[in-house]
Length: 472
Ligand SMILES: *Cc1c(COP(=O)(O)O)cnc(C)c1O
Image (cartoon, rainbow, N blue to C red):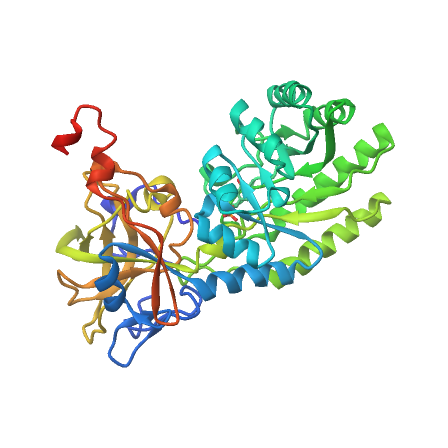
């Protein structure tokens, strides 16, 4: 769920200083199994351990902060999605987190891959990912991106605008190749998620509108285009969605569009991609459906609607991103300072500043995303206090975990772990305040491997043309 905090804590009063959904834990050391990667445990010693290593051991090897990816958990989720959606194409949405090793894991677990930029496409190609199993997204694909996709044999291009169709017609003619395309459509579904991650209502930048008729026009144009093979349509209603209602409506409207196309041309298009956006648990308040529940629900809707339209069931695809990498990743930070602030009504809030922040996880600042945190390097017998985990950046909105209960005795040097940090953290990270980005490591069987190394100040200085090489 996306909890909105319009007024924020400035208006906190005696009743609402902690958000209603947040439950005070009876045991501040307990781990909510829904939030943590499978191998995460709290040892007898009190230390949090992931992949057979305590966070203290991990940080001794990697430094802090660090993103820790549980390899077995990641692969297990990928495989579970593929198995649950047997007979479907399951594309991993690489924008949630991609590096060469992750592209190989995805290939080994038998999934396909979504890419949406030159960078993602290049990483996947360099990792040796089969281009035929890739789909290229984007509302403003450059000519260079389209050229690379066409010459390397990317399996599906998800077309988003008339300009792009024109560009594809020109490039396929010039290169003497064909393009297999899906038309990205907007179904008019108002997904119950934050505005910035909702993508199927009418007033936003993605796709062709079904209701205005422009989707059907684009389909017919591609169908008649000599070097474009129109394979089907694509709908993505948004991200971090729990309510299957939205998927149901989108499925109905996209199938209806396929039926209309068949009426107009006599041709039944073979593919329907229903996108991603399946929600995960960031806090104990979130309860996502399992992949098996979703597969059953979506398959039933598709079968029902296809019967109603007298159509064969098309080949179906989904594109989970965060649901695979999100829960597999944990961010580990070190506490630098703590502060207790009066918020009115006789209530206090503990501010815990860590050695990262909005540069390594922009989601709370960008769309009020909620997270949870625990004291990770040790356990505590102190009472739980309402705490806010904040970063080191020069912004009041530099918040990592807006509301969580942490032990009263959290102090400088303690490690704090934030679960469900594998998606849209490193992939959206910035260098704000000239902060080098943390590394991503994988852990498995008591071993740490680097997926993406820590950025250094030298990496950043190397970009600054005003600093001579010998002065760096
Ligand atoms: C972002 C995106 C996804 C993945 O979203 P998640 O919330 O990570 O599952 C899938 N498909 C498209 C087209 C997207 O833009």
